Amino acid sequence: MFTGLVEEIGILRSSQIRDGGRVLTIEAEVVMEDLSIGDSIAVQGVCQTVVERGQGWFRVVAVEETLRKTTLGMLGEGEPVNLERALLPTKRLGGHIVQGHVETVGRIVSLEPVGTSRELWVTTPPEFQRYLVPLGSIALDGISLTIARTDGELFMVAIIPHTWEQTTLQYRRSGDSVNLEFDILAKYVEQLIRWRSEQQANIPR
Image (cartoon, rainbow, N blue to C red; front, side, top):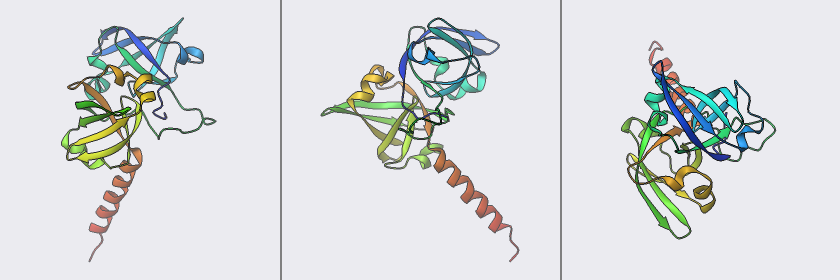
């Protein structure tokens, strides 16, 4: 589990195809302090498992399903990536509950400065529109953000200067693709309501 608070920006040093997936080698500093083989780490918001590590770098394998649902297969060598180690139970949950289970890829429609912040509008596939809740949480490329406004399949998040400077959002432009993970609490509520409705429908009248 993660919080959506990015620890550092790493650099993708290589992306090699292997058995239909991709082996990603990432250069990092902060997250290397206690990173072990087998640990979970969020790369651009995608939960991955460390399979190898060395001095100042680690390696993960993104399988076919991951490449289909996320932007990891689109990344080129030398690109920056958001990194966050798994949450320790002794730490404060400063963002929101993020699993690293990206559901879909959105597209940046506009990114405009407004005062000291920036307003980022993103479009989502229509089947995910129901998870867009004003003032609700969303993880965008692994960054915990609050949905400020919605407009159909579009949502807007306001990016404060600190978030802009400490994440890969500073490199994004209109038309870019971003990983989206919707609030797990909303999905649990939806599933429970659906289950209850199905149970009630099966009760003999």
